Length: 249
Image (cartoon, rainbow, N blue to C red; front, side, top):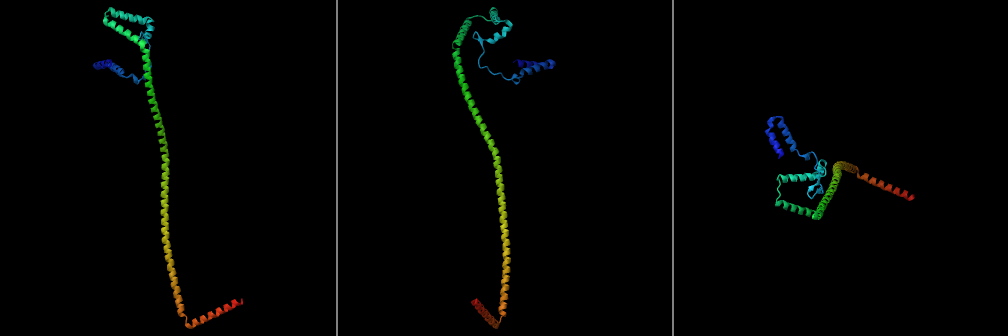
C-alpha cells in the first residue's frame, strides 16, 4: 500500500524536478525484493520463549536495555491505565468473558500443552521419517540411474572399438573379395592362354604327323619289290648272326 502511495505521489510530482525523481527512486527501492540480496533464513524448529502464556520474550529483551527489568511491566500497566482512563477501552461483560476464556486457554495450554506437543512431534517425526524414506528411495534410484548412465557411457566407449573392429572386418572382406576376383581373373586368363598354347601344340603335332605320314608314304612308295626282298633277306641274315653270337657267349 505504501509503495502504491509513493508511486501515485511520484507520478503527481513528476513535474517538480528533483523531488519527483527522488520519490521514483524511493518507489523503486521499496519495490525491490530483499530476497534478491540475501538468502532466506531457515525456519526455526521450535517456538520462542513466552512469558505469561502469550507475551513473547523478545519484547522484554528489547525493552531491558532502555527501561530496565520493570520497564515492560510499567509500560504495559501505564498503557492499560491510559486506555481505561481515556475510555479507549471500556470494561463490560465481554471483558470478563474474554478474561475467563483467556484463563481457560492458558490453563489448557499449561495442562495439555506438553502432551499435545509430544503428539504433534510424533506426527511430525513420522512425516519426517516418511519424507526421509522417500528421499532415500529417490537418492538410491538416482544413484542407480547414475551407475546405469556410467555403464551406458562405458558401452558407448566400447561401441567405438566395436565399430572399428567391424570396419576392419568389412575392409578384410573387401580385400578378400578383391583377391578372389583377381584370382578368378588370373585363372580365366591362364585358361585362355593354356587354350592358345594347346591349340598351337595341336597344330604343330598335326603338321608333324602329316609330314611323317607324307615322308613315310613317299619312302614306302619309292621302294621296289626287289629292294624289299633283299632288305628282308638281309634282316633275316642279321638275326641269325645275332642268335649265333648270343649262343656262343
